[in-house]
Image 1 (tube, rainbow, N blue to C red):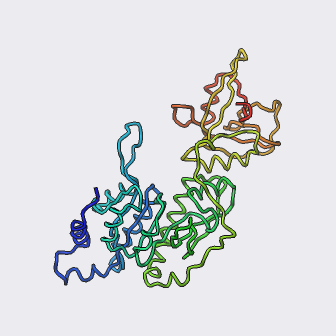
Image 2: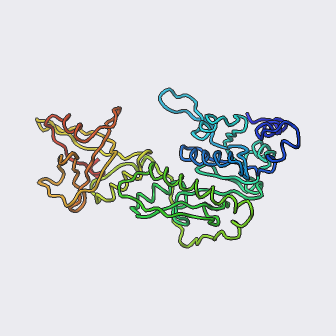
Image 3: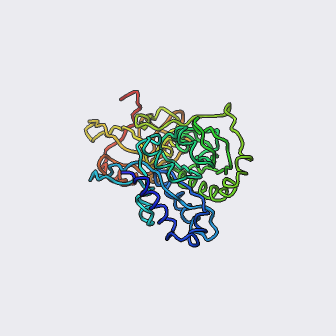
Amino acid sequence: MAPSVPALRRLLSCFAGGNGASSVLEPVTKKKNLVFMGSPQVSASVLGALLDASAAPNSSFQVAAIVTQPPSTRDRGRKLMPSPVAKHALDRGFPGDLIFTPDRAGEETFLANFRELNPELCVTAAYGNILPNKFLEIPPYGTVNIHPSLLPLYRGAAPVQRALQDGVKETGVSLVYTVRALDAGPIIAYERVEIDDCIKAPELLTLLFDLGSRILIRELPSIFDGSAKLKAKAQDDSKATLAPKLTSDESWLSFDQDAKILHNKVRAFAGWPGTRARIQVIDSSGNPNVLEIKIITTRVSGACERKEVDEITFVGGALVFPCAGQSALEVLELQLPGKKVMTARDFWNGLRGQTLRRLTLVEL
């Protein structure tokens, strides 16, 4: 339950380190109130950077409150667990009464408490909730967002995943003012990042949000003195592309596509929802059995010479899947239902002479 308005006043006074004496409070009350909004683990790194910066002797701001997604059930025990951001904050001793978990940022009770905090700036990083106008109008310095793409490219919920799926060689992170339109606000600053062919979505997300944290800390003085508003550049909407949320239905691989397309999809969908495929396992009597596997790590092979178009072979520590044209996908790690991730070699040794045949989605 959110604390009452009088309780918020007391909590903010305590959190600022005050004891009621104006001479003691004076240096602290000059600090601007910043509210952080985020939920997953990558957001926790941004929060950590803000808490560290706010503790510096010459800091001009304090983290007055945190807004994150409500607790959710995780793991096999189905325990109700706080978001990674809430856990990080609590682990660092941040007051639990100043961590808000509204279902929607437009709830009137939450907005009333939010106003009472006197927030001067909000920072969002993968918060996961739409911010209505009545929220955006409250902080006088606005709301700024760390978005892991080179806006206006890849606006939406899955910019890193969709960039990897498209096989782009460069992406980046943008610091932008938040407006009601999706990721369409003026750009304060950005940094470019080259993409390695082997990097997966979780690793790239971590890299980009860490970089975004550094950009944010660097730009905070200009945001607070108003110069960031003057230098921020409007996005060219004609160049915008969208990055819609991933769905589990997209996770299937079909080996009638080029191996590069499949490799990019494995990288993009790593973490959640992952990539799945079905293969045939044929025993010594010629009886086929369909097996579903989760494909974890891949690379693209060179030209594929094969005796049978659908045969899966084992070469150099990898399962080699024939794909479109003469391309081939090498699977280095995979996972069977209910099992731990294993190497391709361990899987191949467990076949005990059985043979493998690829399947396309058309055959299933």
